[in-house]
Length: 314
Ligand SMILES: [Zn+2]
Ligand SMILES: [Zn+2]
Image 1: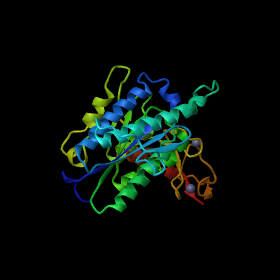
Image 2: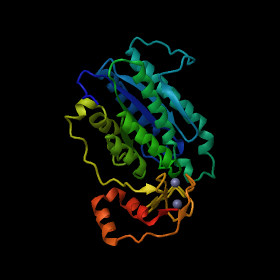
Image 3: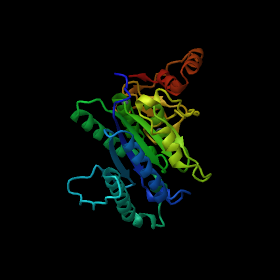
Image 4: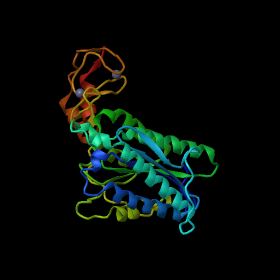
């Protein structure tokens, strides 16, 4: 892949998590977060006139493209006091999020809401973002450097582990950086992995402690590919690389890996539920010294190494 030049334009896809249930618990209101995000987007557009932009918003039920608007979208009134591109983006994003939030009010009022209310299908949004990036890259002859910025307030959804990991590896293959800005709640294991694998930044903003989301975004996520090679990115803390089992969608310390399709399971099973391969129960006596050596050599894939040596193919 060629090296980024200072003059190369960027393509930024902003993914906004507007799940009303998770924002309801956040010390930072969704309106306030959105205002800061719009300022960040304006700053990004002002950096270079060729910079491309797309904004997606997703909640528990749907994922909408707010910008660029579809042809059927109603025109926005002109205002000579505001720079035309800023005005169009701001109006589309604010109106789009407002429409999604008002449509989700009935869900928030439901007293029987469960844990999954606070989860957002992020894989859907990231897939859409990658499709948009692919389409734009194919339609232009100039080199464009793509990246995705995710504003997340929701918890991880273990059910979408497989879909999300597939999206993350697709992004890595396409050379798309994924920056994550997590404003509330526990750290997201999946999104941490997304940032680490694609070379982006994972930022946890302490909004309860009056840390400024806008300031964090400006200092870390505004820089393009060229500038990032010069800047020192924020120190990466310990990242949890544990996998989630395909059977119960639980994070596992030690798993069993199908030697054919590499699906991960938390228990030994006679048949792989993903590829239907039958295993024999002939347990290979693993040399404990070898296992220890493997664990020391590659801590990230330690669990998988143990598992592959205990299951043998029929
Ligand atoms: Zn399981
Ligand atoms: Zn399998």
